[in-house]
Length: 78
Image (cartoon, rainbow, N blue to C red):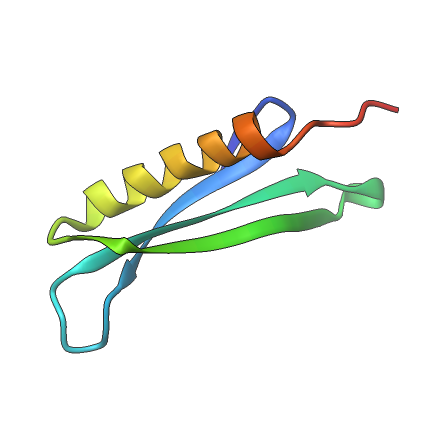
C-alpha cells in the first residue's frame, strides 16, 4: 500500500484463472478512517488487460488506482 494524495492505493496482480500463467491488473483505493480504521473506497479488476508478467499487472493496477484518485475522488478535509 502506498500513500497518494491522502489516500492509500494498492496495485495487485490477479490470476486469470487457476490454471493460467496470465494475469489481470487490479487494485484498490482506501482512506484512513477514525480511530485508525482503514476504509476501502474502491476495488477493481481490469479484465481487458491480460499480461504474462505478474509484476507488470501489479504496476498497471497501481497506476489505475492513481488515475481513479485523480479523476474520480476528492479528499474532503475536515
